[in-house]
Length: 344
Ligand code: UFG
Image (cartoon, rainbow, N blue to C red; front, side, top):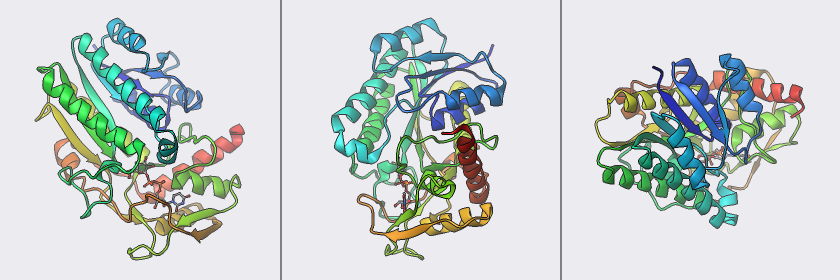
């Protein structure tokens, strides 16, 4: 019998790509989402890519404890991947209570519901933001976490700790994996699912593609006086499909009983630092266009340079990032053109 994975926030950018990879790897998936930060575009795209017109969708908010409990009581869930959370750094500074309430409450409800149902394998989507401005790069999982610089970052750290403590106290009922993502970018090669930011994008790649299509006039590159080779910040941009595949590896590791500890943590990155300017140049080159950009002052809160040492994920989970920056940026551009055709 197929194993079932619940994907909370499964209609969003990362959740939809993970759902595709799980289905293609032979898992059954229940997508649950409250559509607070997405529409049904990606969910419909998942159905088209996988041919699963009957894919179950539960419209629900995980802040509703009773609804979460019902979901676990009524389905045999072998693993849950928790994406349902707010994720805009700047907004979290302006609305901290909204972030703490939503991001903590929903995760607590997932864990309580999972415990009440007799236990579960839990994958939490964490972020490289927990490392702050690291003293050395690349960062390994042993690199110390730094105090968070935003309520968003704080919720990631708190949820990491909550899962660790809950696993420890659960006497084997709960197992956990924390995946710390670096910078997820790109879109599915089918161009049927991708990132759909509401309003002005905060992140670099959606801003680039929206500028290229004419939705934005000019990209501002925040800071060209950083102590890096070309003066712009260095990041580890990870292809969204590669990232999604890491989730399949992590879920299999939990379900197949391959974990070495009850709560494990893995960096999910390429190990390859790329500067903002390099990314912009690569986008222009691979897609054969010129981007309107200018240098602007540094953005508050940005770290100079961070990239992953992904050795642990490579060796322990048998996962490795495979796609080149060029392939990823071509997919991101194909997705933006698809959105343009849809009038979005
Ligand atoms: N950048 C620009 N112009 C823009 C947008 C971004 O120059 O219009 C630059 C940023 O200054 C930064 C780089 O592009 O140097 C990447 O910025 P993103 O906003 O795309 O990504 P961040 O590295 O700031 O943040 C991402 C995720 C967060 C997560 C963090 C962890 O968006 O959710 O990585 O390090 F917390």
